[in-house]
Amino acid sequence: MNIVDIINKKRKKISLTKEEIEYVITNYVSKNITDYQMSALLMAITINGMSDEETIYLTDAMLNSGDKIDLSSISGIKLDKHSTGGVGDKTTLILAPIVAATDLNMAKMSGRGLGFTGGTIDKLEAIPGLKTSMSLNEFKKQVNDIHVAIASGSKNLVPADKKMYALRDVTATVESIPLIASSIMSKKLASGADILVIDVKVGNGALMKTEEDATKLSNLMLKIGKNYNKKVVCILTNMFEPLGEAIGNSLEVEESINVLKGKGPKDITKLVIYLAIQMVKLGKNISLDEATKEVRNVLVTGKALNKFYELIKYQQGNINDMVISNKVVSIKANKSGFITKINTEGIGELSRKLGAGRYEKDDVIDPSVGIKILKKIGDFVISDEELVKVYLGEKDININEILDCFEIDEHYHKPSPLIIGTIE
Ligand code: URA
Image 1 (cartoon, rainbow, N blue to C red):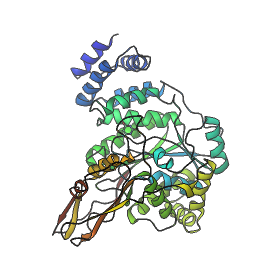
Image 2: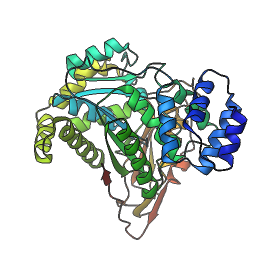
Image 3: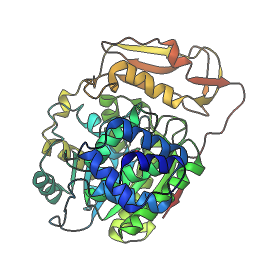
Image 4: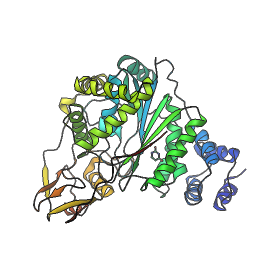
């Protein structure tokens, strides 16, 4: 077998065998296949696609490239949640304590920001002192003690994905449905949870720009899950505008606490409650009504908020030391009308420029900076009314670029639904 023949086969749209896919992954991880050869293959896959069988072989080969986490020493059902990524998506920070407050186990391995989208680990690390790197034993002990832990995955968890993702990021091969499905599912299968809920974002701030593609990706991930006897549920949700108001690490932690206090923006509150109900229903095998009652109860009694503080304390964070920039600039609307469109990816890019995200793997994030979106699609604004607040750090951005991300029109435009559908 050799890599040039395999690239050639995929270039000619011929399906690869299980053995060929295993050969590629094993030899790429052991550095016998170079980045330029892998780039060529990834591009051929992005252009010509993969059959479902090939995608399952790829997931399996990636899964077998490193450690598989055994969570069996944690008593009870273990739940995990994944988001395909968006702008202002702080869902995990709120959802994990809610689900844990109902006494279900949230064993969550999370990642850092990617491109214009933020990552849960960067958000949590906005809390000074908070430790996200821990041994597997520490992780399991924490879940056993308080029902929730959020940690960055171990270095050897799907090393094939770590290498491939970094390469895809710089070779325009991120947006391939089989590559996304195998990347997500290999990591989630290696993380060892029993039930997996995946928030598949759809819109101009997401990898999946259309409902059709999001549905294809969801069906593929469900098929992969079934192959491993894993319960997987995909929920398609709106990313045609940032989620909530806050974008930027400290700002998103602050907003998460506000949601847990019942004082958060409507959209993120509604989405988190919806996801929490689905997870509690699946995790406890109870009816939707019973799950709804449990979720409402932990929110109203403050149990979920206390669980978040408990998680922060256990992971050695000090929330009182968290810093939000006080260099705040207001951006005002330049005309009156309804907000009809927001360039979500553009807003994500601007927050990255401010220092909330990275361009290079080793860039240092400024957790104090970010953007607050005060008006959303469907809202009416009056000329000169405040539209956005920018929390500046060391880096300057061209303020006018933010205004360019908003379309304001005299006609009302109905926003897309927040929850588009559930695929089980
Ligand atoms: N998230 C992942 O983990 N992998 C992808 O390929 C895309 C989004």
